[in-house]
Amino acid sequence: SFALPQGRSRLVLSSLGEAGSVQVFGFDARGHKVLSTTVKVAAESSVGVTLDLAIRYVQLIADRPAVVAGFSTTFKKGVASAGVAPAIRSTRLPAVRPGW
Image (cartoon, rainbow, N blue to C red):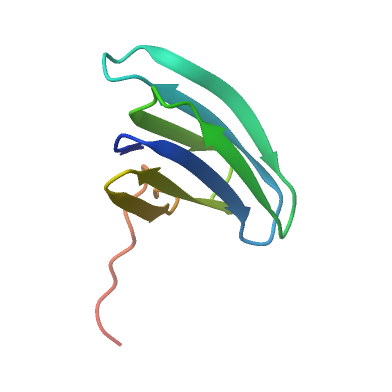
């Protein structure tokens, strides 16, 4: 999840090798959901999604950690961009072993 600055925004979803799908949710400044879609990303490709001007917060839910995202926003005062990597979701703690 990430916040978007004011301006025209484009989200790009890219495969890290395997195909995957991502649920994309967009919320306005008041927290109302204004976008809800699922984007399929073919293996070794990218898909662009134009985001509505009202969207200020984006939530991404990927079916597997094989898809990454990036966004770019342009406004009269400049450009903002960032990459988004999949979050690690695990309820298992790593095994800690003594040194060899």
